[in-house]
Image (cartoon, rainbow, N blue to C red; front, side, top):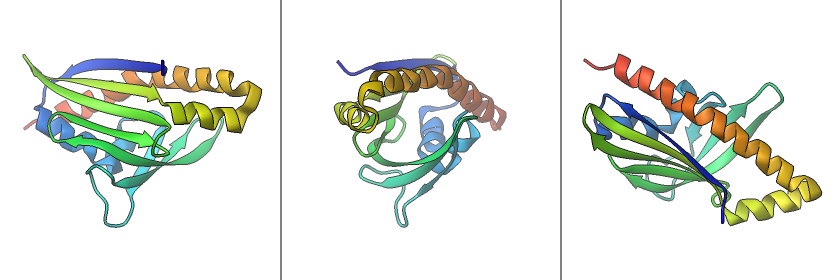
Amino acid sequence: MNPQLHESLVIARSPDELYDMVSDVTRMGEWSPICRACWWDEGDGPWVGAWFTGRNETPERTWETRSQVVAADRGREFAFAVGGSRTRWGYVFTPVEGGTEVVESWEFLPDGEAFFLERFGDDAAAQLAARMEAARQSMPETLAALKRIAEASVD
């Protein structure tokens, strides 16, 4: 089974409004504690098959990733796969009393496991554990920042 995590938070905005915020990957740096910037490939946007690049930073390192949109259903779900098939980040939007429940999820995919084995060898399990812990820590921060920004912009 693929390692996976999820976190949720209710935000006082509509599913469509939150989808529009999250699917605009150029804004990801506003709420992610690790991702500092994202930009679409020329001509691409928030639709299945589109590619974008993200720049991530931690105190230890800075790196860029290429990701492909794998789900784009306005008001319902937006998701992308890092490396096209290694790690899946997703957001599901469900209307609830008081706004929208946003569920952020992270899943390490089989291609990611193969990539880590090739890249890190005997250290692959430790590297995966470190990435999983980083995701576990960042998801509540990401959702809290999204909530703060989304609710501050309510008319």
